[in-house]
Amino acid sequence: VLAKSGAPVCSMVCWEGPSASTGSEARGAGGGFDPRAWPRTLDVRMRVDVHYVVNTVFASAAPDARAVRWLHPMPGASTPEDEARLAEFAAYLAGKSRAGVIKLDPSHSQPPSEGQGGAAAAAAAAVTARCGPLALYLVPPSSPVCGALGVPWDGQQQQLRQGGRSALPLLLALVVPQQAAPMGS
Image (cartoon, rainbow, N blue to C red; front, side, top):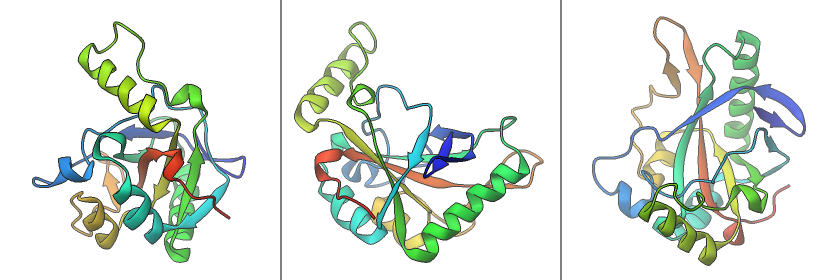
């Protein structure tokens, strides 16, 4: 569930999303590093300048310690009112050039436990040991933002088409180490 200062906005689904055909590995837009388990509620309590997040925080994080994920309303669990609240929140962030900040509890930043993932788990453990807890930045997608992150954007993807349904609003979740994360307002 996405929340804004404790108030529920919408039930969300996270997916890896499209990655650019070239350069996504160098920028961390594809595979990257995810939290061990996403928290039940992503509560945005701070906001920071989106350009700083994209061009400094995300860009300076090691490629193996960052990722871009796409968030959209959970089919079957979100109502049109939920989707409208998400669209309103995304428009608010875009209009203020802000990114929503979620600092993850260290328990969500741990790699998968032994026996889950083999080499991938070992690599994730090394990243966690080096980088510490994770932060998520929620960013409305746009051509400049997606260009800087190395993810494809054709200007029409602001809303995900879900089967025969109307379009669903989207947010990008930038996953980075907290040590690179600035405090928000």
